[in-house]
Image (cartoon, rainbow, N blue to C red):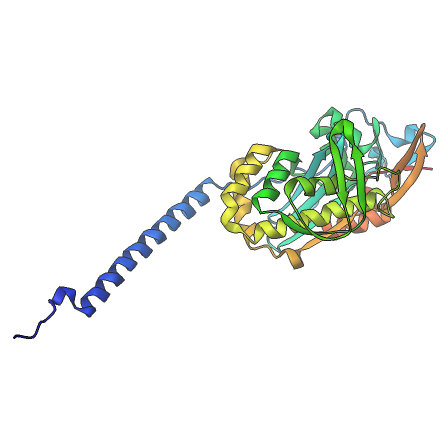
Length: 351
């Protein structure tokens, strides 16, 4: 019997060559798809446009100079502000982040974020919702009734920096995003026990590390007081603000660790967030954001002040400390190449 011989096309070497050829074709197709998508992304992405610097003209129409009130002063009043020309840091942008109160319609959360995409730093600073301002409404969170532009102008005037974009966060989008991430691990800082049957609102958590769904994360952010009247945070609303910042950081960390979900993130933001950022401008931030080191690049703070001020029949107003606010602005929020000076802020003070 003659020994059998495999044909040249079925030899191990030939099979290996066929497999390698197929793998090469697959890799070439994948590479072509990546190039196509990257080129499409580059064509669609639009570089954001910075806003002009704040000026007296940008103030809310209802604002009155503090000099007209004998009981209060401002640091400085609009007519005392010094007009200076500042150079913007390249590719550094500022955002006003707002979440509305589900009951009253006021802004429940007000934050300012500055993202330096060159140096890869983010400053996230909370403005207490009871902050005293001289803009028609004495509490800053009440300005939202007049529109986001009114609030944006007030914040810009208050801090002496331009606000490039605003982002109004819808609670449904917040819940949807957290659930898309599979929930988030978070160390709850205080005992939480609150029930409001008329709102179908029930918040019950014990301190410690827990896995939160989107709805649970929202409840943690909302708690102001317990049902027995006790304030869970020793520093009251400032502690609640700190918890919100920490929870947002935990969500952002998990989101950046799962870039494969990026299309879904963009879709949720587009569907549930009200912003003057265009879709193309959102895409521009994708590339720098994917390389952001949240552990080392993020700094957070709350504007310091006295939350026990009374003025014109209103109690528990939060009066800012100008010098300390200036330090935070220059350290975390300033989009300019030079530090701001105190007379470029417009902080309202009761004498």
